[in-house]
Amino acid sequence: MSDDLARMDATAQAELVSSGEASPGELIEAAIERAERVNPEINAVIHDLSETARAAASGDLPDGPFKGVPFLLKDLGAANAGEPLHMGMKVLKEANFHSPLDTTLAQRFKSAGLITIGKTNTPELGIVATTEPKAYGATRNPWDTSRSPGGSSGGSGAAVAAGIVPMAHANDGGGSIRIPASNNGLVGLKPTRQRISEGPIIGDNMSGVTVELCVSRSVRDTARLLEAVHGPAPGDPYVAPPPLRPYTDELEDESGGLRVGIMRRPAVEGLEVAKPCLEAVEKAAKLIEGLGHDVDEGNPLDMLPAGEGGPDIEDSFLTRWAAGQAATLTQLGMLLGRPITEHDVEPLTWTMAQIGHERTSGRYLIDVGIHQGLSRVVAGWYETGYDLLLTPTMAEIAPPLGEIDTAAPDPMSAFTRCLPSGAFTALFNITGQPGINVPLHWTEEGVPVGVQIVAPFGREDLLIRVAAQLEKAAPWADRTPPVFAAAG
Image (cartoon, rainbow, N blue to C red):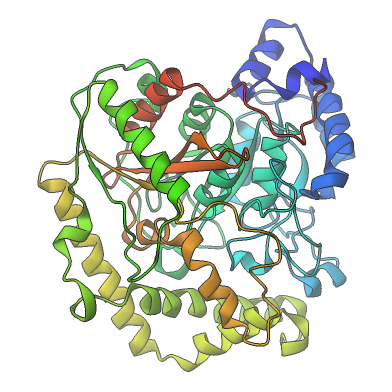
């Protein structure tokens, strides 16, 4: 039974429970068995919550859309009270730190019927596009264990790809849902800014850079989970516009007629895009045209001045990102009862925090203002008649482990090395539009290469509709990596 379940998405597993063909306890035991089978090889799950999961499965579960389905939480962001919360940090691991409360999203995951069996690995504070924290070691990509699963939701991506669970929690501040989805052959939707509450502790992290949801093996799972957990919570500083209709209604909508632009070059000047990433875009464009949509070469970069006259997207993003690390280390020091020092964190984390302290509050507001201007440019491009934008998800395929070294002599070289991974994704954290990775392409060596589709602000419905059409036109469900928790 466990082998069969490894190949089922969360919707199919929930149907087993609702029909009485399987109990939540059986699903949980099978997932625990799968984790024990493959996790030693990929190091995706770092906190074992098996006993808590067994207790939940034997009790009264909410009658949500995923009642009894096993799930994993990333060890950063959404958290349950009393469970470990280490955020890739050795200092929190040594302090045996546990979350003091349920976050709003964690409560909504429970209400959806999901049962958390463990927590997944993440780089320290989710800073980089790989998952190799000094606290817990590297997570390995199940498609090629010499390669990175991406970051910062790399543990979740590897666990889902390897068949431990059908979907897992992930979050995204520069590509951390979409990059692992690309590297692991998964669906990864970054929602519109503030589509999902980050409460009660966080309002809009780094002025709205980060968002939360999941990585999954099917579009329908992502749609159903988004439908279950979206919406504001009391005290949220602002909210995304409500959907036009239930997200699941988009799954069977086969209508065409959308206008889709293509962006083949990133907003980072001089960055080359790897050939497989461009091949993935060409394949996707042909599929999209075959579905009855119109594809042309327009993209938002056409509306920006080229070269030195344009905004410095990389450095202004660093301002916000570094400010976030400075604030987080200060807050953690308050929780631990002592200041966080250079010896408590990885060199890149410390360097980023110092940049955050050095750049003034006025500089921060200037750079947020630059990004708000970019948001108006991107929104204005959609207003010219485009419905969607197609891009590579990354400018490179999954890099070898060890290339993004947060303890390098120049720690900021790790941040620079992440640029090819995040070159197409981080722009839409800055501007707030929703984007989805769809797994349509693999290299000759069997490494997944995703494509990203980006919709106007608030229009996840369009992403789900077209992603579901692509899933039917070029199914990926039968593709499994060499490291997979099922025989055969």
